[in-house]
Image 1: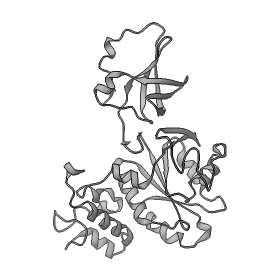
Image 2: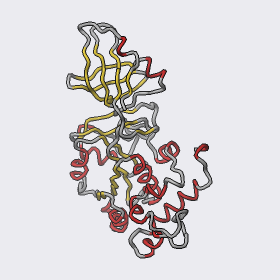
Image 3: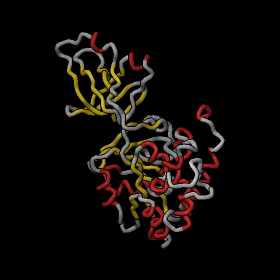
Image 4: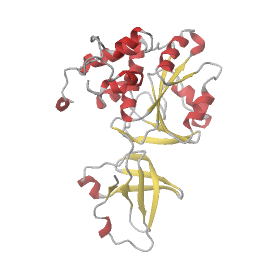
Length: 309
């Protein structure tokens, strides 16, 4: 599917107008900044998008008209492979879920909620544990997510893990999320020193503390893009991307090979008799903490109907 201006064929362009392919890297105040091979152009979306209730998003691949006179316009938006409502971001490849081992301590439940949402959106989750030099418990947490099939990176004071993350950013659109104080800014400074992000205080980009603006922006980092996403907290993410109970089992990637093997088709995978998922937990094939997170999420949404979502 291509989101296209329906009046485009009726538009008479001057000989000096140029059609250019590009990617939206910033959107604010109704203006969109599109990166192309010839530079970055400020554009407005055509009015027909509004009539179709289509809003361009940062990360969209678009075709624009660059005009010698008048404002540049976005004419076509290519099909999105995914999109998020909060933050408003399209075509995200990887979500780096950053958690410190101490100060603040690990919340596997928060990590599991974020991985479930990402799985549903077709976004690859990368689990990053920071401050591993301060507590040896990091291996038990890393084992949980490695067993579940997630790429897991360990980062300590010796700058370990930074090179691994740098490689994972190349050629991708990525976003970082995690509680305040987990070390996102420190980590990104190691990967791209030119960012010069403040640490231990409010950052001005790529991980602000208190946000005064709500726009989203992509920055070039390590051969890819990293999304600067004001307000990208786990709480906001969850509220806009709530998963209903029938979809929830498919959002735990370590459950997938056992779904369909339960005794009853109506199995909730919580504590049902003959449940293949519960059996896998008992046998140590699925981590107990992952199943506990699933049960907690299931109980939070089990009475919510689709129309109430």
